[in-house]
Amino acid sequence: MKITKAVASSGLTGFYFDDQKAIKMGRDHDGFAYLGEPVTPGFSKVRQRGEAISVMLLLENGAVAYGDCAAVQYSGAGGRDPLFLASDFIPVLEQEIFPRLIGRDVTGFRILAEEFDQLTRTDGSRYHTALRYGITQALLDAAAKVAQCTMAEVVAREYNCKLNGTSIPIFCQTGDERYDNADKIIIKRAAVLPHGLINNVEEKLGRNGEKLLAYVEWLRERAHKLAGEDYNPILHIDVYGTIGQAFQENPDRMADYLAQLELAASPLKLRIEGPMDRGSKPVQIQALAELRQILEQRQINVEIVADEWCNTLEDIQEFVDAKAGHMVQIKTPDLGGINNTIEAILYAKERGIGAYLGGTCNETDRSAQVCVHIGIATQPDQMLAKPGMGVDEGLMIVYNEMSRSLALLRAKGVI
Picture (tube, helix red, strand yellow):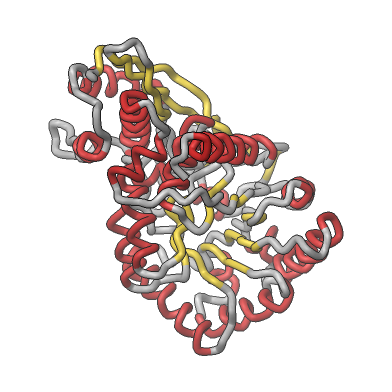
């Protein structure tokens, strides 16, 4: 079955592009916007609307396969590709990539996805990760439509995974509404919460970590108050390097603070994402590996999660090999082709490191649905409810796609 035509349309994501560097510098809020000038190249404001591009592949039998090109909320930060605007990249798709897609056979996924993920421009550079992300989603959908099966079945078949019918724990994030949105998550009994968006020392962590400590205590009490003693979610909090900032990047002081957080969270399990941001990949790997060793030596049972500077498949492999953290976030748009996301999950699992099928609030319903199928096939430890920061919408999209797909697989006798 061949592709007869390719079409692109501009779209909106479920959130916004934010200039992380400017926010860390202390830009003030103005309602939902931020005051002050952006500092990351490409941004016209500190916060601006998130944009996406839908890629639609028309097949010989009249079917249409599609995926969405999207980039992370904090584009241009931590070694990531720059801001992704639809008006800049639709011409690139139409002029440089679509001509190579038309006429291609989509009977299988893996080989074609690897080819288009590795495409280079005339100057030898690779295409923006967002483009590779959306194109490969569409290719997976096309392969599933040709085979008349789910996308999960295609992934399982081509990557030698066993479909076992297990639901993936879903991680919901509150955004800045860390109290009201935490209530929503707790009422709906999601498995992991709240992310928390702790991206500023003074405002959210506290100079000595006291604000986050109080928040963790509140989360523990609130979970049991609203959902009962039998509800024991994992607390997973992204601190964007602010613990390192607050404690002068001293690993022993950071460990002391993590021990306090563990006690505040008990009996709930606690994960801390991005405890420090050391400014480059080699130093970040070293710092996370050292902190993990200290925590294990002191029997502090807080899991640390790698995020910043852990962007590509190759990055993830380096973090995993160095045991730089207990878990890696596989931030799906940052990896480019979804073939890399699949490989990253399997690589981490094979080596005993937690695999978090993540992404960004700044994705779309379609990219979230495709990621669910990757999750069903590869069985990561958790996956992100996305897009958006409103809780209900992202959780609905991910939960319902997972529930529907597992029900179909059971009905077909696949699981």
